[in-house]
Length: 189
Image (cartoon, rainbow, N blue to C red; front, top):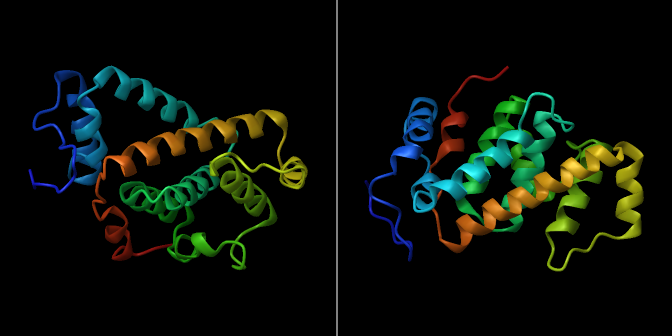
């Protein structure tokens, strides 16, 4: 295991209850993901968080996969989470099939790559991520043009989850793993 300069070190050996997720990560990414090595101190909490994100990422989720990845990427940027930016940028690139949208996320307000629905959701995600939240009547009104109450509720849960994840990782200085860099060399549709 490569040493890190983080002030809280990752666990050297994962508890048995996290071995299945570690094996799955190794199969998919070639390595155990860094957050797993920090969350490894609290496996029950890890599984609760994993169940939460699993529900949000389910096949019958109200938000389409690309929108979920888009919101998670933007929140990761706002929270300055190196690992989350990397992992969610990869997810967005895979779901969009290209890097152009990933590269424009931080400038979504001026980019022509985003739909009106995506812009409403991004505006809401930014306002919700602010401390304290800055969700204005104008933001709510625009969001309601495109999304129903159930979808907005699920979107809010996704935003809250990504804030939890990004703030946990950023506070503990969990480093990026270069996951999105691997996407750059792949052929795309």
